[in-house]
Amino acid sequence: MAKEQLPSIDRFLQAITDAVVVTDAGGRVLHLNPAAHALTGWSVDEAIGQRAATVVTTLSAPQHSANCAAPLEAVLASGHASEHSDILLTERGGRQRRINETIYPITDAHDRVAGAAIIFRDITDVYRLREERRIAAMAFEIGAPLLVATAADLRVLRVNAACLELSQRSEQELVGASLDVLYGDAEKAPFLKFFRSPGPPDTITGRTTRRNQAGILLQLSETARKIRDESGTVSHFVVGLYDLTEAVAAAEALRESQLNYNHLIESMQEGVAIIHGDHIIECNGHFAHMLGRPRDEIIGKTAADVSGPWQPDGRASAAKSVEITTAVRRDRHAWVDWQVARPDGSVSQFEASITPSTLKGAAILLITTRDITARKRAEAEYQDLMAELAAREKMLRLANRAYGIACWELNPATLQMSWSEGAEDILGFNPAPLPAATTACGR
Image (cartoon, rainbow, N blue to C red; front, side, top):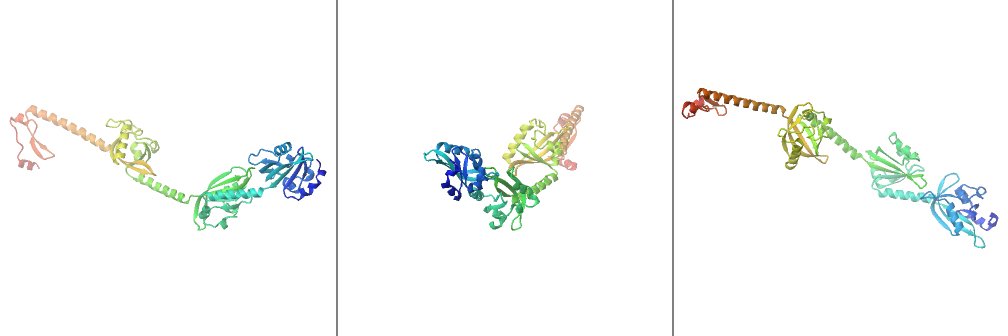
């Protein structure tokens, strides 16, 4: 079929607004109207004789794979029309458009397929509007502050109510605003670079500060995402704004509180340690000094790890630690004596007050300790001295008894004087206590 055989439809093809490309039975272009020329970038003279797939280069939008040639060949082979919606047309210059396409068979007088008419319509603007509405609807459904901007002109298309509330600005003030202005300062330069770059990455997150309409400085975390169409082209940006103002203020207050807390426990003259679970998570310098270890060798260890395997009462440190922890949680407090074998071989003993408490919502044991090493040493020396005195006294009494000596003894606690032990054997009678007057004289 030649072009001269189509005078009856030529004027019709020129007049209609839809793009039309007519092919012969072999799929080569016989004619295209002005609308097809505008969409494909091919003139009539250049297109005639070319394969239709060369002039009308299409891809199935969702898969980016199916070429126009296959549907056209199917129509030419079967004689049945086919429709294809929302596909991508690549014009001669490389620009892509969205089209709806229908391919109709053309038959001759004998009802044989003599060619095909490819009719397509540009729906790019319709698709863009649909996408904008979809993205805008998404923004309004999400409770977090969001704004949607178009990639073509970098202007805000839509904002949701949460964004308006956060900024304390009206919709008229924000819609249409340029991203160049909203992200124009040095702090937000990485975002502006992101908006202007068509390639990856598709997401960027950063901390920013902005003042709302009332002049209050907001601490924000902003996340911007590129929305791409099926061709991979960036069509929109969606920016989420997350208000960190209260969290930052709380963190600063907590940090200051922590500094004050650390200063407090460091200033205490007693050793202080905090146990979470079974492990020491904090201690002050005095506690570290008692243990004879640097602080970083204590944090993260158990009480048994830093104490040595055994306690003076013969119990294993690990087992005794478990017993004490159980008792503290049951009775809400405990006083214990504890011994530590230091790395230098010396031994430290301290008295500990253990109280259950909470820290940042977690159950802990707060331990305050007092070094009693010197006291324990003095007590041991006193016991040794008393034992030595008792032994000497016993020897003296034995000597007196052997030589037949009876004597009076003064009880320093009661200031009462009495005969020494064994006096009855030496004197031959039961001696009575000294008269009260004698006792008074002794006072």
